[in-house]
Length: 238
Image (cartoon, rainbow, N blue to C red):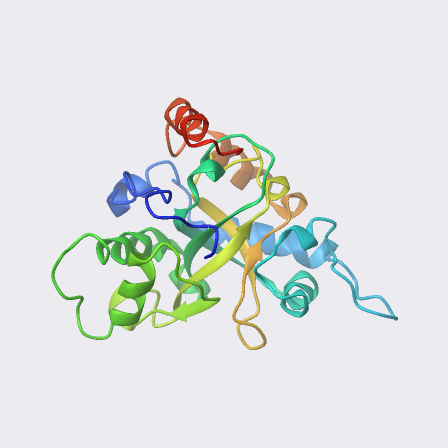
């Protein structure tokens, strides 16, 4: 992604084990997904009769996803749970600017609980100096290059997700996060894989109360003070 600059994407705790990543999520993830999907189906934007427009007021803040794809997701997408594998570090602290990151997810609801394992496996590809396992070379290059630009990469079966795992770039709309920053790295997103390779964060009004409560609990995913100091030192407005 064009926003990513060398050494600005957080690498420190992305190597957390799947058990550590899943520690506070003590409910079946597919139940949370179904709650959000139900809210989405009941309240999703309805297509206007005339010219289609961005269904969300913050849509044009996304300078990566083409408008046509934003429209598909905003009217016709369906909900899956994703986990951030990387993000531009100011997104992990309170701020006002829009940032970008990369998530992993599976389009198969039955593999919902595998998202932590998938995230860990993808990040392992950037750690080792050895050649990546056969079949993972494209994903390894993408996760290893913080300026890589793509919409979605389909993950090989050995990385998990019941053969439907994906690695995708997306816009981090702060208004779609309960606390306005990535306090937690598990998020509901909208996908429509048959029509677009892009994904987007689910608007906040469709997050279930249970998901929001767990998401806001516990310490932040990364140290706020450290990253605030880092932003000031680098002259970055979060």
